[in-house]
Image 1 (cartoon, rainbow, N blue to C red):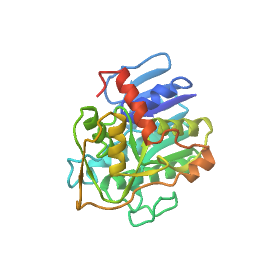
Image 2 (image 1 turned 90 degrees about the vertical axis):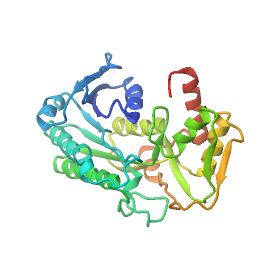
Image 3 (image 1 turned 45 degrees about the vertical axis):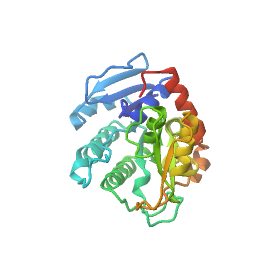
Image 4 (image 1 turned 135 degrees about the horizontal axis):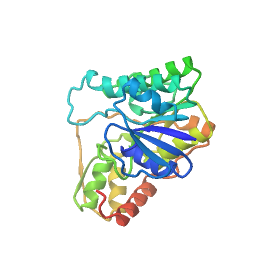
Length: 300
């Protein structure tokens, strides 16, 4: 089976390609002429993601795994939807048009916990209210709707994964956990709030397993993919410091004015339908990361 993967050089994409190339042929779509990692099972094809550029590519594929897209960065104080149109909406539609025209078997899309309403009760279920709190979340919800529309219209299986905050080696944009990891590796002090609210973190290797399972089992539907347990900010800081030998190096700040909103997912549906559960709890994932860093000193 041949996979067409967007975002293959990004955080989740690199981990997916590394794992999936053992059992699949992979065509990695990229805007650049990057060929790093190309081998007998993995090829890179340059594209501008315009429809005429995609049509020939999709004649060679069986499954589209769409990981690419514009992410929300902390530097963007007042982002506009226009900043996400090309990458999260127009690109997605062009990919779907090309995929459906080529009669591809399945489309897999990664979405986000950010499509849910913070007013709903946690853990979020897949049938909960979708009312994004950010422009990024809105753009991802629109991407979901495009996938559902085009795949239903053209009788193509669609699988949508709503991810909690995904972490692992290579992730740079995590506002909490990966920032803690960077500080702890450098033996610097971590600053944590003592507010009692909880966040859901899922390890990238567990996300990759969910994607591969959905392809091998040809399962369609919308699924939450979370870490199986929510952690407080202080719990995260303490666990990171324990794993990376940064003992007793936490400053606890009280009475910080932040949004005290629990944010975590129910994974009951994916457990039942895909027989997927996360293999790594927070500490196990961090130990796995530490071992990877120790084996590859150039990793940051």
